[in-house]
Structure formats: C-alpha cells, structure tokens
Amino acid sequence: MDLQVSDPERTRADGPHRLPRGPRLPRAVQGAGFLVDRRRSLRWIAHRYGDAAALALPFFGETVLISDPAMAKQLCMAKSDTVVNVRPNLGRTLGRGSMFALVGDEHRRRRRLLTPPLHGRRIKEYEAIVAQEFASEASRWPVGRPFATLEPMMRITLNVILRAVFGAQGSGLDALADLMPPLVTNGSRLATLPELPRLGGKANPRNRFDAERAEYDAVISPLITQARADAHLAERNDILALMVQSSYDDGTVMSDAEIRDELLTLLAAGHETTATTLAWAMERLSRHPRILADLAAEARSEENTLRIATIHEVQRSRPVIDLFGRHVIAEDGLELGDYRIPKGYNAVVAISLLHDDSRQFADPARFDPQRFVDAKPGQAWLPFGGGTRRCIGAAFAHMEMDVVLRELLRTFAVQPTAAKGERWHSRGVAYAPARGGRVVLSRRI
Image (tube, rainbow, N blue to C red; front, top):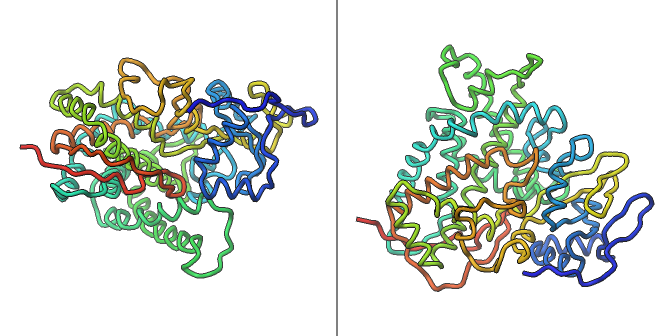
C-alpha cells in the first residue's frame, strides 16, 4: 500500500504545541471504527492524513498515530523522563509488578535482572527443550487431512516457556498448562476494553479473568515458596530460581507479588505471540510452494539463513501486534518530527502501516523472504516494538520459531494449497489467522 497525504495542510496549532491534523469525528465514532475493524481504520487514517494523525479515542484518549519510521525511532529513543509506556497498557491485567506497568528506574532495574536468561548462550540451552516439545506435540498431529495449527503451536510454546521458567516438570506445571490458555484469552480481550464494573457474574470477562488470576496466584505462590526454601537453588538454571536469587544494586529483592506478576507476564507474552506467528508461517508457506521447497531443502542441513529470513518476512507481512506506543509525561511535551506532542497524549506507532508501506518495503503485498536474506531488517521493521521497551523475549522467540520450523520441515511435508489467504482475526491484543493457520501434512519417510 502506498501511503500518500491527501491534504496539503499537515499541522494545526495548539498553544505552544504542534499537532498533526486528524479526523474531526466524535470520539465515540473514532473509537467504534477501531473496535469494529482497527486495521481498516488505520489504513484510512494513513491514506487521509499521512504519516501522523491526531485522534481522540475512548480507550487511549488523545492520541497521535505514527506511521513514519524516523518518527517511530525518535519515539523509541525518547528518555524516560519524557515518555513512559503507553497508557493504558497490559499492566492493567498482568499486575503492578509486571514490567509493562513499571516506569523509569524500576523498569530499567527489572529489565537488567531478567535479560540474562533470555539472551546469549542461555538460549542455546533451550533449543533441545523446544525440539522435545515439538516432537511430543507433533506425534499427535493428523496426517492427510487439514487441521488448524494455532492451538497446537500454543501448546508447544506454552510448554517451552513453562519449562524455561520453572525447570523440571511437576504437578504445578500441569495445572498452569491447563490454566494459562483461558487466562491469556480472557486477559487479551480484556486488555482492549475500558475498565468494566464487576457486575454480571461469569458473563463479565472482568470477573472471569479475576477468578482465573486468583487460581493462577494459588498455583504460583507455593512454587515461589518452594524455590526460596530449595537447598539446591544455586544449582538451578530456571528463570524462577534466577528471580528468587537475584538482587538489585541496592541489595533489595523482588517480593512474591512482584515475582507472580512478572512470571505471568513471561508466561502470557512468552507464548501467545510466538505461537500465532508460527500459525501465520504455516498459512503463508502453504500458499508459496517454491519457498516451501527451498525451506525443506535447507532444513536437511544445519543452515538457517532462509528460515530466519522467512520468519522476518512472516513478521513483516503478518504482524501479530499492530500497535505500540508511549505516553507523554514531560511538561513541555515531546518533540516528534515536525510536531510537539503535549503532556498527557499517547504517541502510538502503527506497526502494520510501516510494514505495508511501499516506501519502506518494495512490493509489500508480495510474500518474499529474499528481502531479508543477507540483509538485516531496517528501522521500519518493528514486530517487537523498539527502544528500552522492545520485547525482552525477542531473541528467545526467534530461537523457538527457528527450531519449530526446522523440526516441522524435517518431520513433515506441507501440502501446498491454492486457497485464498486466511483473514485476520483479532484475539484482543494479537491478530491470528481466522481459520487457525490450516495445513495438510504428510509424514516424511
């Protein structure tokens, strides 16, 4: 899609601030457009107003929508005394101890504490776990008939993150494996809605989520207590053990409540988006037989150049998360391109618009992994967000997707299809293939 400005007047004055133009529609109408079809609304706004537009939304309030990579980079690089995480954010559902809810020094300290187990050499230790979980799940997959891959991929990535976080299998992990899917589904939907009154019993998603969260806390709390009392804690290399043992520079440690919230963040964010991207990969590859054949040939070796490029292209063409942003807290606002955004505004980056922009990616409607072969993604490629709030599990997620696709292509042949591509389906926070990434597999001899 070519994004063009349809009106020569790009800015309007607002006291000492300079805001981009935007629709004059009532707040409720703008919000309804986002609620009914956010992707179409984003495309219309970009076509009408260009790379930046001022919006008034029921959920985010006064907002500036950005679809320019230079301004997106500028936003990501803004200092923590100028902007904080977009408001509201996933901290509403994940808890005040979640990294999503933390700001300033607290956020930086938590990020430094949690980075080591999700990067570098530690990741290599998890590759065997991913292969094991894939083999266990794939042994039950049907052969010769279509099936949706989204839920099976969810089970793989959930089991992987559970083992990474808690180490050895146990009864508590079995309970979490059952509890997390509905909790994540309800939490994801709830995160895109305004605060709801606690009325209506189980029909109210807020009440359902609260009950599931209470059950989660009841399962997690004994695991934290056991870890703190474990005489062999220093020998463990799971993420829970790291949290319990680690301390900040001033000697303080994470409380049980903070650990519960942060573990929920890792479990929820650590499996849904990765699994959804894998389902999109199946949907895309089954419609591109030449790419599929090249990937199958590569999978027989130890090479992964094309596979990594394919993962990048799936993330570009089918971004699971389409928005990320910051909330302006500086009294004099935020300088962003030609504009100055006032305090109290949200500045939100439209990832899907950047990824679909022909000025950034040639022929963006074409699924073409070659665009990322021997070329690193540029600043317009932002599936994990950016800056100090870039997804802390990005490297872990790429490792998982690489191993799952490698094992799948070594184990199965994917039957190409001429069927029309699956529509986008909103699961709340994430966008998934509407039919779950359906494929037909045959087992390789």
